[in-house]
Image 1 (cartoon, rainbow, N blue to C red):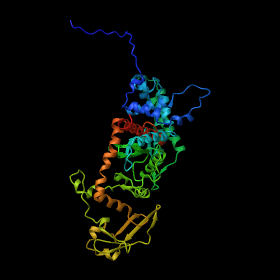
Image 2: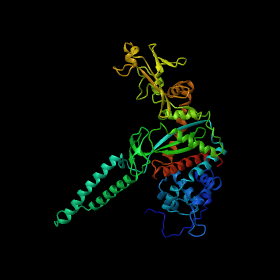
Image 3: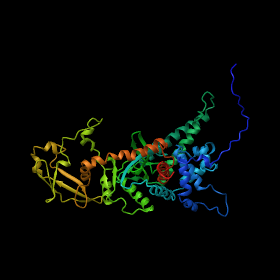
Image 4: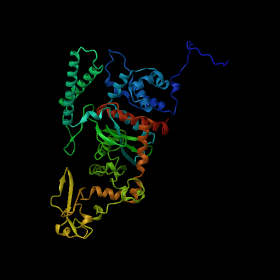
Length: 500
């Protein structure tokens, strides 16, 4: 007969555990513990508590911040999961001093950090600077589009939401009528559907929520004066097209230093397009760096790279204003590079003339077309949307019988060629100047480094840290959550390359 080891569930076991010894030097949890205890100013939270004379003792913000950061580092984004870990995981027990804050305490703590999060973030950024983790010469900017805690079905224009409310109410009337008819019918062969009352209650809540939202909010108007889609659940979020499909979410921006991939600033923006996202991120990074002792001209002469989605007049003007050595290609730059000819989706350069085929004569402030005819500045050239707009046009008789007409004009019945662009104060084409900069040997060498700087950061946060959606609602709270993840990332850099 086989023999098995005896076991007894009633057996008593005493396991001596030293909480301090569970925090092993060199580990991320040790770095979190040490940084919060010794290098971060946690007095910023004292104004949130008024229980010095009366009231129950509160959980120390140090304890709450430690378990939240470790939870985010371990892929525990839910406050309930963090609460469970404080009861079951010995590392969380050690970090929390064997205290067990419940999920509501943890969630309320995270949501209330709007006045403290940047101070804490800058404390970690200062440690990165002191530990020589910031290179301060080369930066890369990119965005990560993540779903929000909101439904796509709850979004639309004001007219769409009114239509949705009307349909819900019509469906409610039908269900209520069916309910009344069923109550009158005594035939047991046709019992009431058991979930009808739940369905009525659910629809009523949806209609009330839309009604309340319409009373409290106005239509969202975009830069082009057109109405944007609003969202009943989280109106700061937006519909965005991603590689994983369309999501209702936020575009989480990160400006990363190249030396050790430290994030100098992060911000969640409720807009899928990046054509004006560079300015707020650069401004936020400047404020963070000023907090740790850097000058206002810190970015002057520094290299900044961003992908083609950031190629816009607004973003390039901001780089010029800050005197950044920026490299932001247009969305057709790969089609001009023969090295990508084997890439799927590659399209060779169009056979029609482009802006680059027209030569500028600075002395006369005119452009020369490929056929030797001149395009003169239009009198209507001036300022548009606060920017200098320049328009050059050819003479109608020069284009009418031109042999190159088919390659120059977009439409067969077009009468003349126009060149229109936004210019810097000197009159130079802002976008074209950036295109020419990327085409240089230096530009071709610098820009590809962007991928190795910023993409691993998002891979670490999304894949390793499990940050695949925001759980809070509203830009303020989502910003807090995103900066906490950026903080965890920077703490990990300190643990790997810094004092621990």
